[in-house]
Length: 240
Image (cartoon, rainbow, N blue to C red; front, top):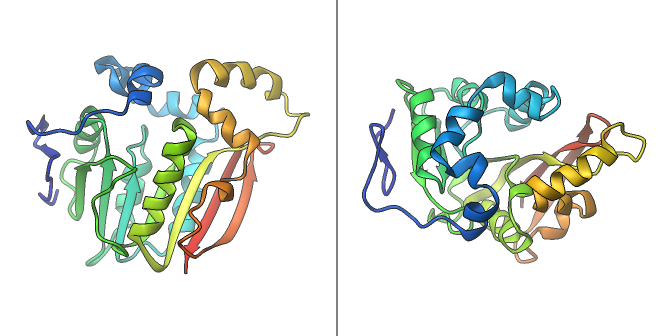
């Protein structure tokens, strides 16, 4: 693995200087991403697939296809349980590279173990609202089930940063929740479950992702698809 790990990871250890975790992560998602036992519980391919009602593999594959051709500099904002990043890394060829950012050191350590021995990949401890990379750095940017975990103000900043660091002509691929049809068998079950465990996810039931895009960066929606009765969506943006 390429050693460009500033403020991040060296081997499996976290460097002394790390960023503070956002309050919403500590208070809402401590059980899924922050607690030391979270990774041991959730880092199972079958469990990730079950959480997405058997749709993880399909959503992973359509997101990767939307990124294709995977060329130049690629950015993944936030680590993902399961084999998404490994599959993405498999598509990195030649002089192309993959950078992955996450605010939780334990998530970066877990990903580094999963990607051990792969070249052309760098991990950074960064906050999605302040990535710290130069404007127009990346050709492809991926946000895979991140936006539903963030309060609206944070979500807006994350999208603004994703667009800022993506070069004109570059593609931003977003996979996340979407409001299902009312006839969906899970509609009335999932609403209270999400309200309890993932309260910000219901924002994506009520609003279009485009409503959170910044006004000062030109972007067009290249495509938008829904899956599993509308419960999930894949949105592809192109920076102009």
